[in-house]
Length: 68
Image (cartoon, rainbow, N blue to C red; front, side, top):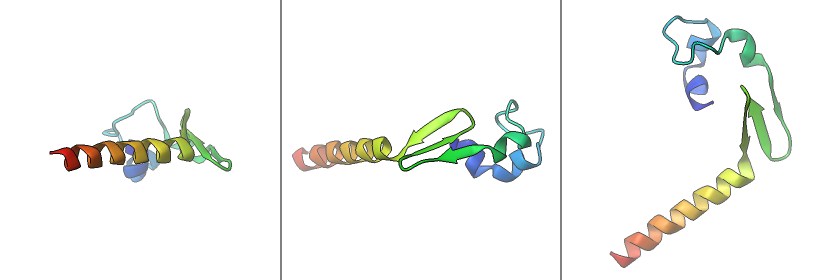
């Protein structure tokens, strides 16, 4: 999802040097949202889960910093 999002123009034009050759421009149009999740290109990003994971990572890094 990240690679396609960052290089959207290459995928939209079916550029021959795009990283994921199996993804073509027709797949870019189909996605869906609900209150917590974004589903696109066969993958789901749950914002609540991602936020919780980010907070846990931040806490772990902060704790390591404080103990060093």
